[in-house]
Amino acid sequence: MKTTAKAPANIALIKYWGRKNETLRIPANDSLAICLDKSFTLTTVEFREDLEKDRVFIDKKEAIEKEKERVVKHLNKIRKKAGIKFFAQVVSKNSFPAATGLASSASGFAALTLACSKAAGLNLSEREISRLARLGSGSACRSIPDGFVYWHGGNSDRNSYAYSLYSHLYWGLRDLTIIIQKEKKKISSTKGHQLAFQNPFLKSRLKLVKENLKKIKKAFKNKDFSLLGKVIESEALSLHSVMLTSQPALIYWQPATLAIIHKVIDLREKGEIESYFTIDAGPNVHLICQKGQEEKLKKEIQKINGVKKVVINKPSVGARLINKHLF
Image (cartoon, rainbow, N blue to C red; front, side):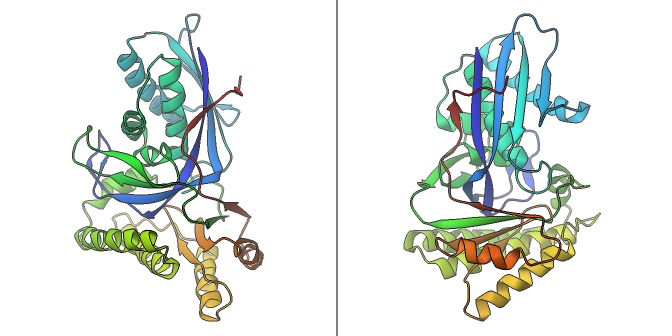
């Protein structure tokens, strides 16, 4: 059976860095994210008797050895769970640049997990799909549920999963995804996670994360945008302080990254636009603002040298099956 899924990327407002268990991708801490409607992956999967090996295509190109190996490893988990032995054809397409710190692995493995499990004849619950997606890419578990998503880190395969904290319609926030670099980053997030526990500042960061989780839950409950913003900026800077002091140092920021940060703070201090920045493991920046401010903010950001593209996202539903196939 041929099955296609669409899964959103997600931007973590409270991030995780470092894993308790590398194999199961159990995070060092809980996290909270927003699913994004314009940043997504489409994936079609078909198990076929006539195939002699798995075939994997990503963004119109046959996957290179390392990329394919990761996908095949995930396919094997699902094949084993479904009790089938057929090889699969997998075709995947991203709406945004992959491996640049924009969560392509999250949307990619979320879409792959949903499409593959259905194509294999499995009928899994949302929690089961979230857990399974996590095995492919940790943050992929957050791209399965709707809207504003909480990942309960847990300590085992069974209790590490994501769930919807609030619907995508709960709060009219907007995410401006600002693309500075389209090329793949030199040091992957996977490598960064492995380096985290060697960092002497990680312990302090994990303590701060617990405090920030309490604050951000309060901000969401009361729809307190200013509190939300202060928390997410503190959180992003905390994350990158650990990256910058790793060995080797993970210096993802570009001049335009800093220019955007300064511009956002300047606009806020002048009382023109209230928005806040957050940055994942890469140079590209996400700006969070309230509905009605996004176009004005976009115009200001586009003036900055080095900004290649600005995409305005709304909170999105999670991974879904669709009827239009890629092959």
